[in-house]
Image (tube, rainbow, N blue to C red; front, side, top):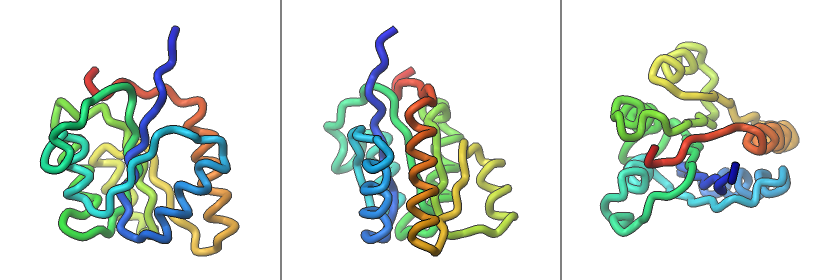
Amino acid sequence: MVTEPLSILLAEDDEGHATLIMRNLRRAGIVNDTKHVSDGQAALDFIHCAGPYADRVTNGPMLLVLDINMPRVDGIEVLRQIKSDAKTAKLPVVMLTTTDDPREVAHCYELGCNVYITKPVDYVAFADALQRLGLFLQIVKIPRECD
């Protein structure tokens, strides 16, 4: 069985957090292609090959790492749209956010998120959480975008 490389779409409006996330995933051994977008609408456009991403060719497995609090379209609405569309419902979504309200966590799982991770405030704890996410991504099987 040939394993295709996993593409990661990071939807995060805080540039500092995005840099930390990508850096710590690399430190965890994740060298996969990672695309960063800074708002929910850009994430939806990327996933649906629309707008500035109309020429994007879908290929291989993709994972969405999604913040909740973003401009234009928030992460909850992105999650809702992805999981309610048969073409994108299988796309695995990792919520990575500072929001730790149990009702928000439950709501994201009800909408279909696959993993919910709260960003720790402490840098060392944040790096540790991303290290664990990186280890998880090395073993998880993810379907192709177009499957």
